[in-house]
Image 1 (tube, rainbow, N blue to C red):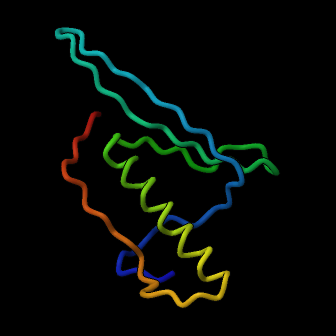
Image 2: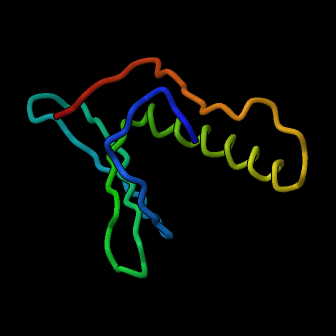
Length: 99
C-alpha cells in the first residue's frame, strides 16, 4: 500500500489482539474519562509487538474502517470488482489529548 504520508515505523506481524479499556476519574470533580487500549501480540515470539491507546472517538472510527476494509478484501478475494483501492482516512469530529 502506498501513501502520501512517510512512515518511520516498520510493519510487524501480530497474530493475536487484546483489547481493554481504562477509566480515569478526576480528583476534584465527579467527571470520568476513558481510553481504549489495543495490544497486538506475536505468539511465535511470545511478545507484544504494538501497544496502542485510543480515544473512544478514534476507536469507533477504527472499528468502522476495519469493517469496511474487511468487506473490500472479501469482495476482492471473491473476484468482485472493487472501486478505489485508496487508503481510507476519516477525520475525527473532536480530538482530545490526555497526557
